[in-house]
Length: 267
Ligand code: IPE
Ligand code: IPE
Ligand code: MG
Image (cartoon, rainbow, N blue to C red):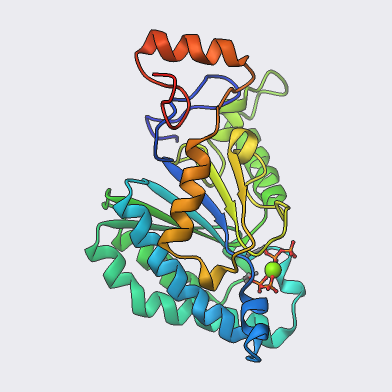
């Protein structure tokens, strides 16, 4: 079931904090980063792991609580077999190398997505890493692997129906949201896509309903703490209205004695 902090942005206006509580990232542009350097595409994926390590640290330093990153989409199986195999090996190697460090830094590690297509050895490694870090509370790192937003919604619907075998109608958003693979996390405050494309590519379709969207041309291997700060600065300048008027946002902020924009600039 959901954690205590669970809210649905369409049903209840969530608390807005100066630093995004949850950041979701489509880590795109690895292949182009490598091609620009006359390197094989997969070299970009290796460098992408380094970028992720730095971004995790930067998020922790800035007080972000949740980071959810898109590592492999349900559509990425369409890539050349050599690239898919390389990505799977890289996943295994990175887990072997990083899990202890994640754990010693108090990071809770999770993988979301349909793991049924993965090598059983990889699935075991993932589940072991999740169990090892299950009590950690300092930071939540979630890797979306063989993940697709549509798959997740269908999966949640099936789970919801199984949980309520006698019910046919009258479901609420909460009934579905608690079956999503991200049920442990608040909805993302900030969505970042690197690599210049301006699309969602089947990532977190349900959860991004009211997230602030940020697109940058920076290729993922080049995305660093400074680049993250630019994204957070952009976020701080947004007025998160959740359907209300700007005047209502101002009033609500004044009544609460703090801003309801991320920067709190109406405080
Ligand atoms: C993102 O980088 C990583 C994965 C999808 C696994 P890409 O591999 O998509 O890089 P580009 O978009 O081709 O540059
Ligand atoms: C999205 O990137 C998936 C990941 C970053 C893992 P893609 O590179 O696969 O997205 P499209 O194909 O350009 O939409
Ligand atoms: Mg891409």
